[in-house]
Image (cartoon, rainbow, N blue to C red):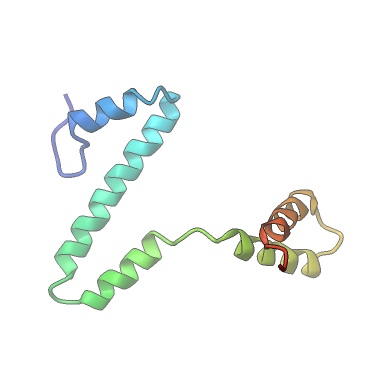
Length: 106
């Protein structure tokens, strides 16, 4: 039996993850992320009375937002321009997807 600590997922959550019928490695990754999120929130709660801006900065640093398709495509274009002879196959796929997502003018 695992010692119940604030980062240990409750049995109901473990059962929910098991019912997803994912490979074991995916469930481990989900559980690991849950524990990390609980630890981050505990640290933010501890810091918030003394340094609220640190909480915002800590969350931003530890849980950065994913780049949008547009941001990823622009990054790919920059990489292609920096190294035109490098591998570009998947870069173009993302750029094409980003271009296709732009609505046609009416």
